[in-house]
Length: 258
Image 1: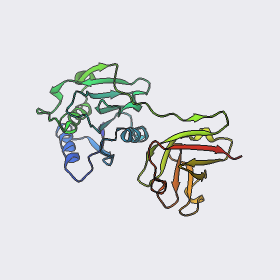
Image 2: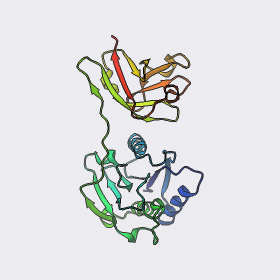
Image 3: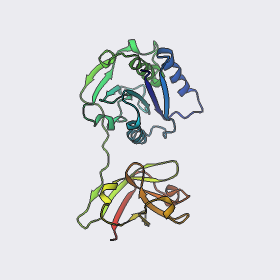
Image 4: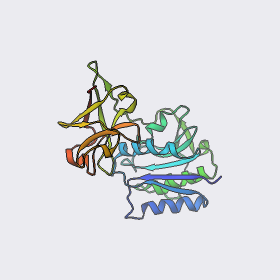
């Protein structure tokens, strides 16, 4: 079966970096299907890439190979990494970008240390092209992980902020992602809202929790359950991040009103 390889980077599309990676992959695995997950990760924003991967990769078929290159440590002693799970493979730098995949049952980490599966010349600035793309292509051709590297027990894992249930009944969490619409996506799970109506409080502003964007007035600040099954704050037909002047790390409190 033809392998699927996804690409997630902070490269953008103005330059030829993404195209070079695709060229390397296709030179080794000509029948690979390459899917651009996103190339609009903010430069060096590992946590943003972690969130995008955690939300999008579960929707791909089993056996998909996910390449993610957001790599401020390129050229240093940070390790190149392969993570295998029962459903997928992940290829990229060992900087925490695959923390979600590493938390899956059965996940295994491998340090990529077999130059025979890289390009002949490894640059100090573009491991996406010279190391990660060829490794992904060799995986697509059926090369097993043990030929590409050796297993390790200490891959980098990033801590994820956890929401809190308070004794007085209110909930608090953090904004963990801001999408292109300016919606402020929190870590408060939808399941915690069962049994009550709620009002959100963020940056000194109140936001009623509604069922859909259309239930809010145009330009009104609202909260709702987003597609990730967590609470998000939005402005109908507007940009909540810009409206409030806040971003990742901002506190969101939810108070029951009935």
